[in-house]
Length: 95
Image (cartoon, rainbow, N blue to C red; front, side, top):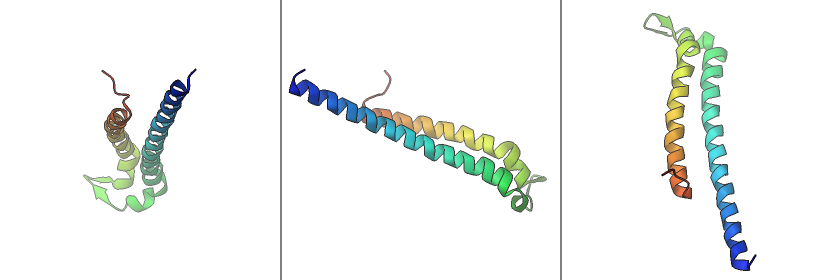
């Protein structure tokens, strides 16, 4: 392998590592948000949130039953949009 081919391989490896670092960072952020909403609001803060009523239902109940699911679906769309941007930046977009 020539020196120029080795440099190209090193650059490709660095780009791949940077790509996956961005991907994992995004996943950790989004999963942390989902955990905070589902576990925090649905379990830990349920007593505080139950003092607030929306549509006849206690807010703590709403978060435990619907809120975490809605947040999860929104995070899927955020993930897709951000990954499209990351793919474009690293040249990994699908054709």
